[in-house]
Length: 288
Image (cartoon, rainbow, N blue to C red; front, side):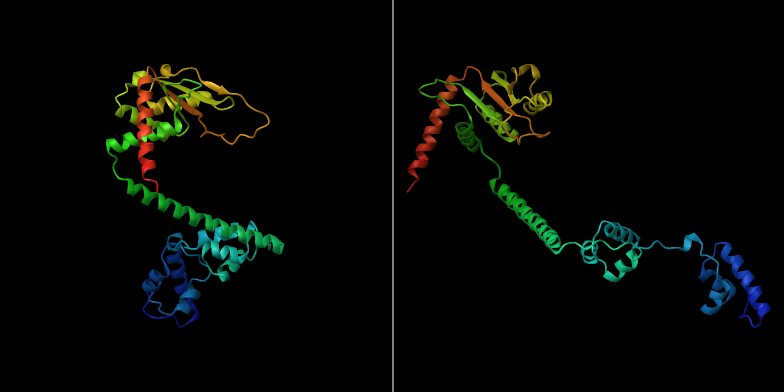
């Protein structure tokens, strides 16, 4: 099937074309056919293979196919060339070529366009602010380092005096009870009680939650958090719905509050009050 020279007559050309077509249909590439038939002239090779499709294995995937499909999708949603260019990072000439058969989007009111642009800028600003916020938190967390037992002790005293129940002259409540909806606050309070050698068996638990919430899921969540059996929990307190209020504490993340009560804790409560009094006195002494 090999030839050593280019065809000189019509008959030679037809014979050569028959060979080229046969090789093409056998799955050879243009380069392989050129080398096999010794045809170095691209024009002649084009004529020999005219009308014969290339085999599938020689077709390289177009790197821009995904971009093209995305551009068409955005165009159908009414995006302009400028918006598609910003979103995909490709040239307007490519976009024009890809979507020229699609209907042009309706021209938006200039006011609406301005609103869309302003919203886009605001979304970008929010993303920047959130990134800065997270960076600040990470740096701040690294500044704490490892806590000593004394630091945990003082933190727990201040935490209790801010969030725990307190004794009043008109209502004697000399017992340790702590209520909070923040799981980290609950964990810290339990770690503080461990530091004070309060046995877990002395701690009672009770959930307080809105009646329209998923009560069973909330009870299960708090029981898992404090690693206690559900039998250690008292009866859940349900808050009745007020039709005149709009609740914001809704959804799967709403689990109400957990109440922790230390039994036989009047002596511990008096010590907490004394500890807090000393901390407050030291703080007052530092004021200028």
